[in-house]
Amino acid sequence: MFTQGIYTTIHVLISLAGIASGLVVALGMLSSKRLDAPTQVFLWTTALTSLTAFGFPITTVTPALVVAALSLVILAVAIVARSGKKLAGPWRAIYAITALLALYLNVFVLVVQLFRKVPALEAVAPTQSEPPFAVAQLVVLAAFVGLIVAAVLRFHPERQHAGRATV
Image (tube, rainbow, N blue to C red; front, side):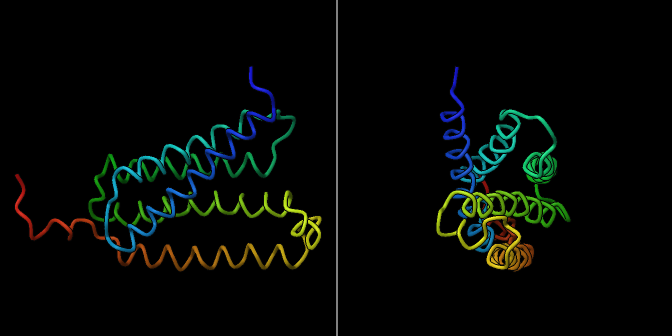
């Protein structure tokens, strides 16, 4: 049986793997590359991050649980767009938007946790209602809005194969 500390460590490591692989996938989108292996790592670790959030002692519905549930719904759409609909037509943009929204939610939670766990950040925003926290989250949100717009415009993996003969 896992102790709470070990479970938390596993959850955090999965989350960080999801964020790291998600950033690789995002860069791939900007280069119009599918990056199949990193995408699988990203989708699985991000789903596991959300699923493991429900493994903590739950007494009430918390914002973390709402984010985890929302992330799972968004990931389901991303998986359908990529695997079920093969990024055809509007599903390419739907995939880019939902995949990057799932990544955003992971980064959003990372910022929350950093302000809770890093003493210097906790000191400037002890209740997370102070301006430094709001500014940090606004910067992350603005960066992701820009990233999502750029990905929708630039992610066209079908063009990578258009001029090549298939075997």
